[in-house]
Amino acid sequence: MEVIIRPTAEDACRLSARLIADRLRAQPRTVLGLATGRTMERVYEHLAAAHAFEGLDFSLAVTFNLDEYLGLGPRDPRSYRWYMNTHLFSKVNIDPRNTYLPDGLARDVDAECARYEELMREMGGIDLQLLGMGRTGHIGFNEPLSAMRSRTRAKALSETTLEQNAELFGGVANVPRRAITMGVGTILDSRRCLLLVTGEDKAWVLAKAVEGPVTSMISATALQLHPECRVIVDEEAAQLLENRDYYRWIFDNEPEWERYR
Image 1: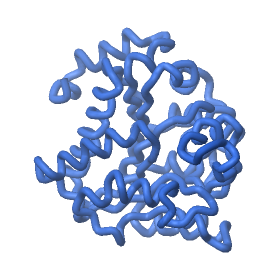
Image 2: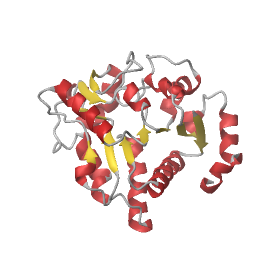
Image 3: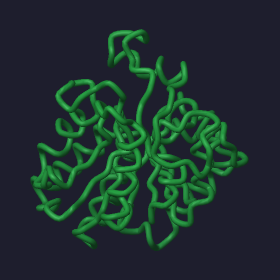
């Protein structure tokens, strides 16, 4: 795990977008794992701008999203399919047939989860997985006690997650209580992971996720086991990290980061 601290949330989002764009330029047929949420909106804005003004090409890319709410169809403005179409897919030259999300309206949820796993295998696996982190320290919707070897499945959402997403649904009572999510094991199968965390409200759980023990109570701690995981954070999120001076030194002095400074 490599932690990079940037001064602001905007700097962290911009760097994350640049890393994704560089992967696409180096490997146009990249299979991207994508995430949703307010933090990711700025990442997708930067990627859309890179497409519009720098010619960043998405035509050969394939994407798989981490999750989708059960009970929401693709035409529902609260669905993650709608989110992705709005914030990224409609703004770049990606083939819509190569953009995959779980089916929130699937009649057989277990079969849908198995189908999603098989699709990822058929596409050769995920080359770069973009991740955010919830206030419980979850990645995807892998709430506390999610098994480290878990695969794509339906998961009940915690009260903390329901409250975190309540604003988007007009109140906690309206938030779907279950979602299909990639499992922790599915995420760890990705060749590279990129975790983006910003904001003071994530500082305590970020410190546990990065510097604490690996535990199923905080699924993001599993990323400590990944052979190639970069964690991009802003100063607000980093304020409780014990080794933050060392992480700053990495970005300021390691040659591989010179082109991003």
